[in-house]
Image (cartoon, rainbow, N blue to C red):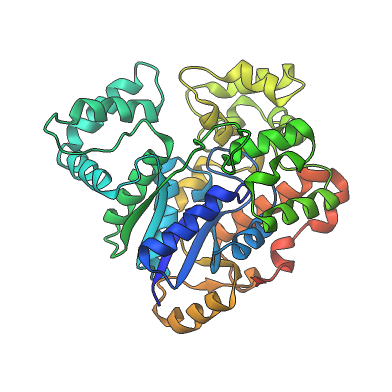
Length: 403
C-alpha cells in the first residue's frame, strides 16, 4: 500500500483541506492518507477551535485514513521543531510520501533552496544572528539572510517570505536531517491565503477567516459554503454541547489568573519566555480585562503575535524550559482515529513501524504523552469552567475513532 502523509491542524477542517487531501492522493497515487494532527494547542500558540476528536471525525469523513496526534511539545513549537515532530512520525509510520500545501506549488524550488542554504549554512547563521540583534523576529531574520544568499543565476528558489512556503521548507529540512526515504510533494494553495478573511462567492476560505466569521456572528450559518458537510455537522454538534468554541478570548479569565498567580521569576521558567518579557506579561495581565487588550500591550516589533501566544500557551499549561529541553524526539505514535482502510494499513505494516502505536494511553507511561493528557484537561476546564469536570481524563476514556 502506498502511504502519503500530511502534517495538519484542521482548525477546523475546510474545503481547502479537502482539496489538499484529494490532490495529495492523486499526485502520489496513494492507497492511504495519514494525517499527523495537532492536539488541543496549536503551532501559532492558541487553543484549538474544537477538540481533537471532533477534528479527527471531520478528517476521517473527508478522506484521511489514519489520524495520529502530533505531541504538544511539537504542535506548539516554532516551525522547525513543528516540522521535526511531524516528519519523524510520518517516517516512523513508513510513509512513501509527505505532502504539504504551499504558495509555491512546485517542489523543485524547495529542493534548490535547501541545497543552497546547506552549502552556505555558516554565512546564513551569522546573518540571522546579526539580524535578530536589530530587533526583528526569527522568521524575518531567516528571510533577510536567505535573500542575501539567493544567486541571480536563473535557477528557481522558493519565496521564504510566505508562511506555508516557510513551513514546507522546514518539512524538507527535517526529512533530510533524519535521512528519511520519503519523497516530498507540494500542492498549490488555492484562493485563500494563510490569514485571509472569507470572501463572498467563493468556496475556499482560510481556517483563520472561518473562525473569525463564527466568532463575529456567533453562528456557523455564514461558513456553510466553505466546509464539507461532515465538518459543518461536527461544528453544529459542538455548539450544542459547549458554551463556546476554543479561543484565548474565551479562555482569558483562566489564562489571566494563571499569569498573575506567578512571580516574574516563575514566569521566566516557562518555555519561550525570554529577555525579561515576563515583567511586561505580568503588568499587562493585571491591567487588561480582555485578551485583545492584553495583546495590544505586549506585542512589539521584536515579539510577534504568534511568539507571544506560544509563551502564553506554555504558561497556561505549565510547560517549562526544563521540560522542553528534556524531549529530543517523538517516542510513540498516538492513534486518534482510522477508517477500515487505515486499520488494514496498521495490520499490514505494524511490524515495520519505528515507534510503538498507542491506542490506549493507560498502556504507556511516558512524559511526552503525559503532557498531551495534561493539555487536554486544561483545555476542557477552560471551555466551560467547573461544569466540564465530567470531561477530565478524556484521553483515558476516549478510544480511537473508527469510521
